[in-house]
Length: 112
Length: 254
Figure 1 (cartoon, rainbow over the protein chains, first blue to last red):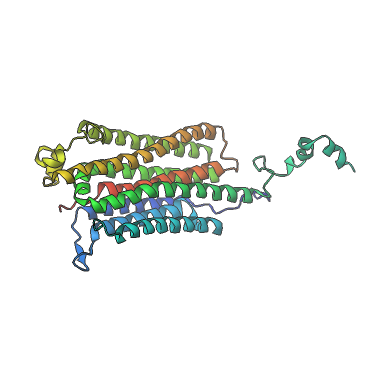
Figure 2 (cartoon, rainbow over the protein chains, first blue to last red; figure 1 turned 60 degrees about the vertical axis):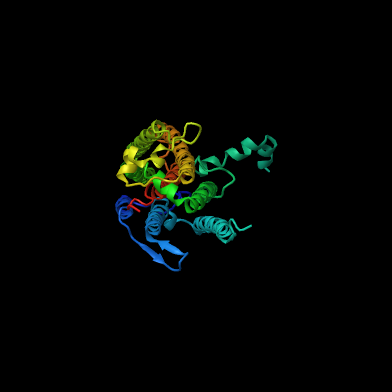
C-alpha cells in the first residue's frame, strides 16, 4: 500500500505497548507500596520542611504520565509541531500553577 | 477552453474530476492526507490543552486547600478505599493499553482486532464506572457527600468509624473536622468530572465499535480512532494523578 497519498507515519507496535503496560503496572505497585512507608522529611529550616511521601508519589505519577504521553499518545514519534504543542501546554500549566502558589505562599496571611 | 463550461456549471462539477486522484476521505482544503492528519492531530492536542487547563484549576485548588487543612485532608482521604482505588487504576491502565492496541489494529487494517480492542476498552471503562459507583454509594451511606446532610462523626469520633479506626486517626477539633467537607467537595468535583469524561468516552466508543464493524477505520483513514485514543489516554493520565493525590495521602500512619 504505497500510494503517493498514503499517510506515511510511524506505527507503534504491540511490543512497545506491552512494555509500557508493564512499566505502568509496576509504577502503580510502587506508588501504592511507597504510600504505606513513612519516607521521612527533610527539615530545611524550622518552618520549611519537605516531606518525601508526596514527592515520591508525584514523581512516580509524572513518570507514568510521561510514558503514556510519549508512547501511548505517540508524541515521541510525532511531528515537531505536536511536540511543541505538548511542551507549551505543560509549560503553561506549570507557569499558572506556580504563579498561583507563589501568590498564596508570599501573602502575609492573617497579618493585616 | 474546455474548462470554462465546467466552471460555468458551478463548483460541484469542477471539483468532481479530481476525486479519482485521491482517497475519498481527503478534504479539498488539504494538500495531502499527511497534512490533513497532522492538522487534526494538532487540533486534538489543542483541545487536550484546554482540558489540562480545566483540570489544572481543580488540582491547584486541591494543592492550596491541602496545604491549609492538611489534617482534615489526611483524615478525609482515609475514608477512601485504597483497594478499590488501586483496582480502578489497574482497570484504567489496561483500558489505555487495549485502546493503544486498537489504534495499532486500525493502522495495520485488522478489522476484527480493532472491534475486539474497542469492545474490551468499553467493557473496562464500564468496569471503572461500576467500581466508582460502589465507592460513591459508600460515601452516600456515610453522609460524606458535602451538603446539608454532611456528617462529621467519622472525624470527631474516629473510633466509631471502621476506616478511621483502622488508619489510627485521632479525633479532629471541630473547626478542622469541618474542613473535611472541602476535601470531599474536591473529591466529588474531580472524580465526578473525570467520570463524566469516561461516560462521554464510552458513548463515543460505542459509536466507534458500530462503525468499526463496518470497516470504517481499517481502510487507511485512522484519524478518528487515533484522536479518540489521545482523549482516552488523557483521561487515564488525569486518573493517575487523582489516584496519587486523593487516595494515597499519608497512608503511613502520621
